[in-house]
Amino acid sequence: MNREEILQKYFHNRLSEKERAQFEIDLQNSEQLQKEYKEYKHLQAAIKQSEYNRLKKELKALEAAKTGKKTTLFNWKIAATLLILVSIGGLWHLSQPADVDKIYAQYFTEYPNTLKPVVRGNEDVQTLAFTYYENNEYDKAATAFSSLLSKNEDADIRFYYALSLLNDTKLELAKHELEALLLTNTQYKAQLHWYLGLIEMKFGNNAKAIAYFEMLQDPQAFNHKKAQKLIAKLSR
Amino acid sequence: MEKDTEHIVNQLRCNNEKILNEVYLNYRESFVAFVKRYGLKNEDAVDVFQDAVIAMHQNFVIKQVTLHKDVSLKTYLFAIGKNIIKSKLKKERQMYAVDDFNNWESLDEEHEPTEAALLIKMRNGFEGLGKKCKEIITLFYYRGFSINEILDHMGYKDANTVKSQKSRCLKQLKTLSNESYE
Image 1 (cartoon, helix red, strand yellow):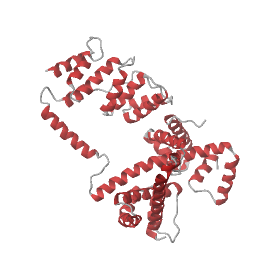
Image 2 (cartoon, each protein chain N blue to C red):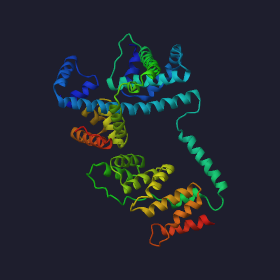
Image 3 (spheres, each protein chain N blue to C red):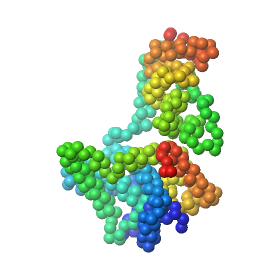
Image 4 (spheres, chains in turn brown, orange):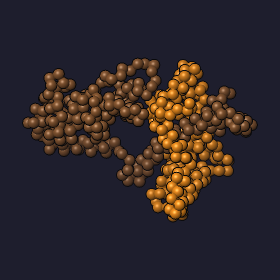
């Protein structure tokens, strides 16, 4: 048995009594083994916690189904129904100037990765984050970008963090991040104005939305034509 | 151990969550009635029961616990529940007691604050992994599958591929959790 196998068997109660006793002696005498032991222990504890959280959610849902009570968990079916109802309500109220959600969906496209082309074989967090981003796994991308930012602040990386949130339909959080970026010298200034405009439009703040779109007046600016069209629609 | 219990335990050791749900529904009423004797409200009793079910399940999955032939699943589950209540009550007592000492840190259960922070980081790293990596890491470190068992389970080409995939995933997890053991 190699060291890893012994460690694994130890943690999963698969060593014989004799092997276990020997392992405990070895553990006391080897710093390297102590290090590996700790790593295994922490990893297992981390997965155990994660599994605990998942199972707890499942059991709460089971409990809610059993007792027929409304679950305190986020219920996607209810949320979807509500969303549809809200959208219908929205349609009702927003017959003029137009249906905002529809326009948002029509004009919103995910901003591509133009910052760091993903080079296969690299395994740093940044590559990982952009790989997730390019694969549309935005929640994971957001986690990875956030981990990068905790080490080193970078406005352009934060832009992609905000966009991951936005693509994951976390509009409030994305808005907060994008607004913070207005004060930086990110190369994505025009993109900030465009996406903030879309978010404000979606939230029904037409005046703010128009103000952002007006920042794209320069015919060379990012999405200049689309911004002009939206200004026209919202001003009607 | 009854044959039926043996079957259930074996299924739980194989991480069968459908059986886990059946166990939950089967013992819920009697457990809640049982722990109310400790003065717990219904809501808290259900909460403790859920924790007991998960702890039992994780003992089977991780430690591959086997029950002595005289011990029923119910006895085992209820014993775990009792321990959870006891530590809960103890913690509450400490909460009142520490008011005098202002010694809040000692309340932080089993882990030191730094260790707790490390675990959160690692958990985030684990949860940030892609599906395949999550599976391979879970099979090895949580369920205790050997490299060959993972090979059979996930249908990799050979043991070496499993090994290199596992170490790649582990590296990714460490990078994600921003934690190095070096």
